[in-house]
Image (tube, rainbow, N blue to C red; front, side, top):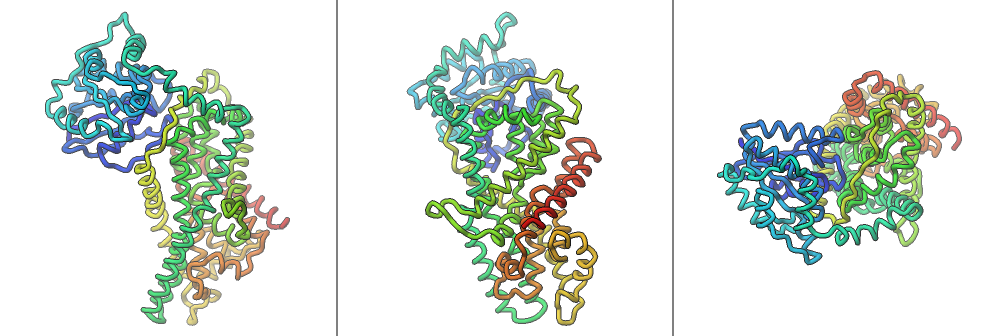
Length: 605
């Protein structure tokens, strides 16, 4: 299959254009480094490939290096029929520096090239017109004005694209930059002739930045936004969670009533609805977390947050670029660890990767939500907008961040500083403020829920079935105390007894090494087997009735905040650091720290 290559600088609307051309549900983020991996989809009979964003063919970072390597490979590939270079109409000069370099490379290899002048709606909003026909003549490359967000010119671009790929030889660039006239001079001249004046576009951006990047007000706004982020995870997701719980409860009652007493009834009630159903209740929180982070990404605030955090993070041996992997770690540690590749300093990159597991990922959400519902009263303030339980969520997330920064300071003192001698300065482009494109954002939210269920669901279902089987047999009365599981529990109970936890919690903690969220499903199955027939999906109520003490519950929360309780994260750390010693050393070290703090907390409260 022939390929159409899509290239461009970060924050230029390239990924959204890719989505519109292919219909694929791909993440669109408004900060550099998000498209490090190649994405592909079908456009008619062709394969459209979205390359990582780059500012120049002269690379400054690892993500740009990957992008440029792939571009050179595509130029030598006979299957490359056409190169589409995406330009930002609001920042034409910066886009053309890269675009002209790609043009000269395409001419050198006799590859067809066209320019997609994206975000044309934003310059038209200021009553500015771009003569794309004359611009194309001056550049020696056809230019198509469009907006991937508002769909202006997109239909015409698709029609033209279908025609161009059938006769690519007519679209090989006709002009090259002369040796005595650099791409920087040409891009500046072209932008001055056709582009909108930078002051017009930046006027509104600078006005907002004067507040959000202010030394005092910007910091207050940052903490306020982060507080709302974590508050929303619990407070705003509660109605959706209650709805899912009610649906599961109704389905459980209907199904078990129709089947009647027996082993199948017990299996469905305890393993399926009690175990797997308890896990599904917390999926809405994943969706809310993805939605809020998506708003911050697409609006352009995340780059500002990275800038705000650079100076304070530097005190802990980190970079402002560490903020993005840290925030990504609240969704999942695995892509967050991989996102740390964009940090230029090897030492800061290593410290960031080693502390990312302390960020409270979405897999911890079900555990937090369950234990907070058990331990913290459902008290609300400001007309129900803020809740005590939501504040507890914020405290847990803050504790993870605080621990990560504390560990970072220690690692900074004891890691080799020789690699920092030629360290590059912190450089970050601030994208324009934009309203999010709601369709991709909502698709991203739905996709995150599907991926979460697809990733964790099979594991939780298998664990629930195994725990149900071990807890159901061989006792003739099917009592938990006489089961295989009780025997296993007796072996490991001495480990968790000092924390105020019995063997059931020990079993749940043990199996959650496969995935943290398995803890909820395992407890749901265990409490279901014990006969909580009247409240099948309400696991929190069952635990409250069982009498979990405040100290033990808080200690358990602390344990899950700090412990590296995920085998996939250990494997990713090993792959990214190239060291089995570092990966398993962190697993043991964080585990011992988590156990020690849980022990202290359980005896204080």
